[in-house]
Image 1: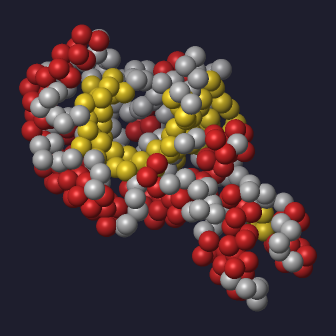
Image 2: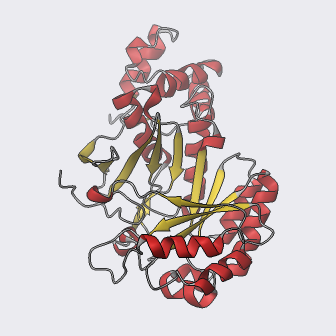
Image 3: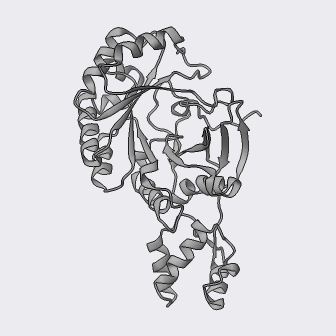
Amino acid sequence: MKRLNLLGNTVSDLENLMLSFGEKRYQGRRLFKWLYQSLQHDFSRMTDLSQELREVLAERYTFAGLEPVNSARSVDGTEKFLFRLSDEAVIESVLIPDGEKRTACISSQAGCALACSFCSTGQMGFKRNLIPGEIIGQLLFLRERYGRGAFHNIVFMGMGEPLLNYDNMVKAIEIISSEIGLSVSARKITVSTVGIVPGIYQLADSGLKVNLAVSLHAATDEKRRKTMPIANKFGVRELAEAAGYFAGKRKKRVTFEYLLIGGYNDSRQDAIDLSRVIQGIPCKINVILYNPVTGLPYWRPIRDEVDYFTGILYPRAPAVTIRKSRGLDIAAACGQLAGKYIQN
């Protein structure tokens, strides 16, 4: 009999499993804690479960995580991991150091259906949604490799659009933020979206205390449609309204990501248009310098152009930061994840 993988099961899933065995519900919580908090995947070592129950679990179930088929380390310490899933789909995860802390950038889909013209992931097309275990598996791998301090923050900013895999993402966040799971506060989790407006409202109303980052990248519908097909469905105005709603519900600023592309969206008028779009929304603007992707007709602005743009934007905008690109030399920076074999 093929054993079933318990990776991705929530507390309630495991409680119901215990009930199906005629066991007490609390045994499910014990099992959950062993699997996700203690990282003990050998059922025989789960000493607060009965011998009989451990034998049943070992016979019928497994807890198989993800193993990378390749990895690379940047000169700046950033690491990228390529995972091949059971159906041969591939995903990438990135671990980004920032002083004493590290951020795990994880994927929610294999590929992406949104086809933003400046993004390497968008060029590879959409394969499928990740199930909760595949999302969680990226983080468990990092914990097993580096211990409990492997990461301090988590961003759904790798491959895919997380709000198009909403249910699986939320289930994964439930496990991540559980006190007896990975025990990472939802306040340290950021969900990044290119602007799935219904999903933003749904996330705002969910009660999850996660942060929201909106990939805006242009401040007018006309310009946004040229590079982001999703803009044909959701306009800048309704996207800004959704972001404002989220900020009001969460009582926390939204981050607007703005990919600065040389000669395209870095003019004085672009900065003024952007400042108008975010008026009245508690937010900060994170300016990202375009990261080159082979074969795409865009270029990275020089420092003077960046300073010119941000100088106009601030103080018209409440807060402006410039994100330092990490992992450029291993194609691990924003927009560069392509699911290809990494050359060390």
